[in-house]
Amino acid sequence: MTDLTLYRLEGCPWCELVVDELEDLDLAFDSIWVEGLHSKRNEVKRVSGQRAVPVLVDETYGVTMAESANIVEYLHTTYGEAAGPEEVEATL
Image (cartoon, rainbow, N blue to C red; front, side, top):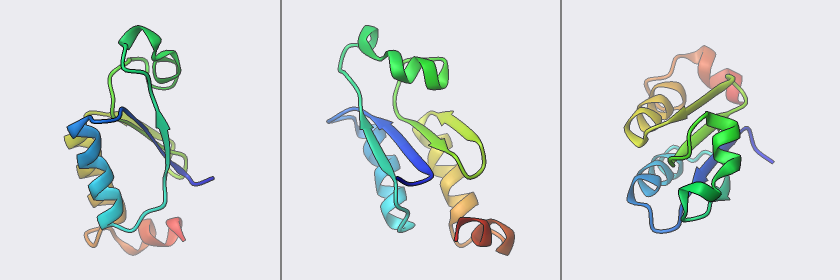
């Protein structure tokens, strides 16, 4: 199990943007595949307060967030080259 968990839907282009960023940053993550029907996404609702995907949970920093653009920016800032030594060291 990793500290990053991505709630995603098969065929979701916004989810794939996040996956691409995770892979570009060489970050290990767990995927939780959700149901196509919003009404069946109870686990996503419990974790994030809403049923839309993608949702990223980062246990290292206690962050749960939605919206692919926000998630990609967060990953790049926190784990990418722009991250300071404190952030990088905390992930090792």
